[in-house]
Image (tube, rainbow, N blue to C red; front, side, top):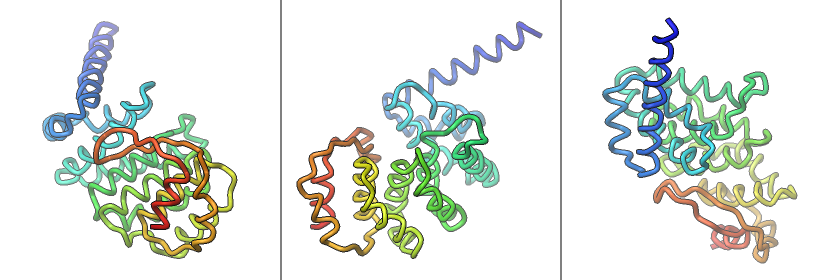
Amino acid sequence: MIKKNEKSRSAGQHRKERLKELLLKRNLTALAGLAHSERTTLRTLASLLFDRDKLVCWRAVEALGRAAAVEYEKDPEKVRELLRRLFWQLNDESGNLGWYAPQAIAAILAEVPSLIEEYGRVLVSFLPEEPFEGGVRWGLARIAAVNKDAFNDTVASQLLLRSLKEPDKDKLGFTLYALKALDIKFNRADVAAFQSDPHQLEIYNWQTGEFDKTMVAELAGDLLR
């Protein structure tokens, strides 16, 4: 029994290392292919959201969306189960906070838009929740790329606009980023106040697979334009 368990762990570690290598190469085509052929792909990618390498975590976010779209065609309930697990990781009671869970949820919804109505508003409810504020804002912007009107409701708009008044500069940057993506109406004077703010932050670019370095001032300028 011990040898069998060791063999199983070894096989699991091999799968994880293989997927990690593909993530670092950003070979999303190969990863989607594995989702077709190997049932463990979703679970292994979800485990890589906890990797020590930040780039691996973000690439896993991206790949989970692609793999979930493949799986949804075969087994929609399996994807819903994954979403429920990711939402559970946003709960203190989970015992294992999912720092990248909001981003992964958003990537899945962006790749499977039919699930946005079912789960999108649940994601919105975590906008004020620490430590997920930045991840949720990035996630809403990601979903807006496929459905700009998905969050043009009172709750999302009010929560985002209210956070323009908060002192956390990272949260502010991601708020500006989300407001632009969602095309939410805002008070120009509230945003103009940040046009000289030099605070720097990194935002993962899902189109290039790299991190964009920017400043609050740049994000404010982009939104005003």
